Length: 133
Image (cartoon, rainbow, N blue to C red; front, side, top):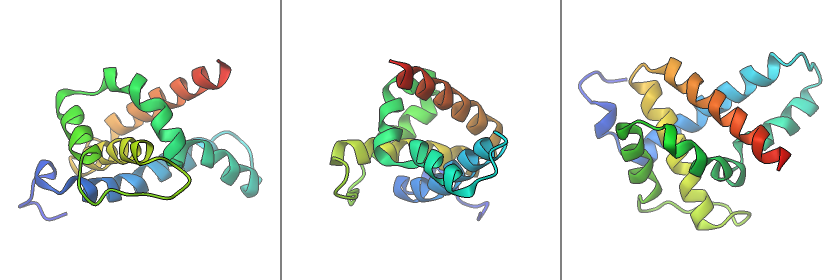
């Protein structure tokens, strides 16, 4: 990354673009460490995390754990223009998922990968809780 540009000044949709990849790697690392060696099963399990619908499901609960800066990034990305998604989800769901991904992109570019792992572990716990409801 160009060190002249602060991640806080990068367009929120660009942060989401980076965050999408960061989030995908965190999901794959978590699933790979589960001991399952069947890639087809791992891919199916990954969809439980990486789809906009599933990311949106954890956003409300996760928001109470976000720092003020992360909440600002989330809000900016969620409200960014040009933010439309696939037909399989509502615009609302897609925008919230974009906000979540932007937080992961922001933290990564800030060098806060430990924070991303912390947030991902919270998401993992929230998702398990919601799946059991």
